[in-house]
Amino acid sequence: MTDSKHQKIAKIVRDFIPPFLIRKITGIFYGWRGNYSSWEAANKKCTGYNASHILDKVIQSSLKVKDGGVAYERDSVTFDKIIYSFPVLAGLMWIAARNDGRINVLDFGGSLGSSYFQNKKFLESLKEFNWCIVEQPHYVKIGKEKFAGPNLHFFYSIDECLRSFTVDVMIFSSVLQYLEKPYGLIDEIISKNPKYIIIDLTRFINEENDRLTIQKVPGWIYKAKYCCWFFNEEKFRNYFSPFYDLVFDFEIPETINIRSVCKGYFFQKK
Image (cartoon, rainbow, N blue to C red; front, side):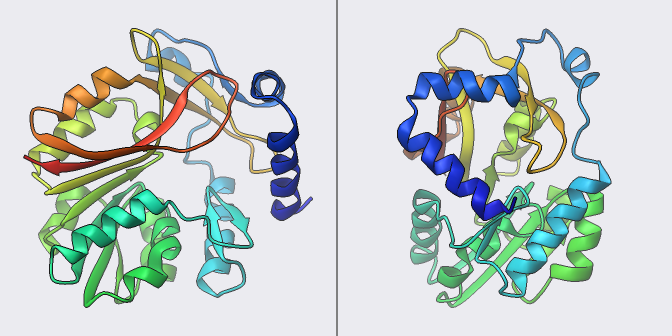
């Protein structure tokens, strides 16, 4: 079955089945499970992002976007039209407007350019822009070989990127929750003093503590299991608050088998 057919089926399910049933149904076949006491305990049951079949599918899907065969790709799944995150796009264009039509973006965990190609049409209207992706080594190698161009660049670390570009904004889209030590990365981010930080597609729960789960990816995407955090929102926001003001936040409608909210944040340095 094609990605497009799966998307249509998923839309029908969302439109006609109550959210509490969606949570139960998805929890049976895929989704998020558990409440693990340590990353080590959860990670023993996971496969991780390093599997070659995941990268192979991401490459195939991303090349289709680059070559104009499909409109958009996210997590290796292709779409017939671009699904914009308009709050993220508004934040990017707002930054560029305040910077004489110029912007340099550091996209941490940006795959092979998913968000770059998603927003490219708008970014090309600017006087100047650079989209810099920091990723795992095997993604960076492919990125440099097959996807890099005048405006799209790939780096092995944040420091390597900052040696080449003065970054205006750092973006973290659906990435912090998949790191063993997300607050360690946040400490590193804050230490670099970016003027703006955008967090997108991150899940929060109404519980006292962060919750560590295992996510089972639907088989029609690819076979994989990942460690995945659900954050306590107050704790998460308070981590930024001494250094950054919240310009706005936003919700992303999505129902999964764990009761939670998917959100994004746009921070500006104090």
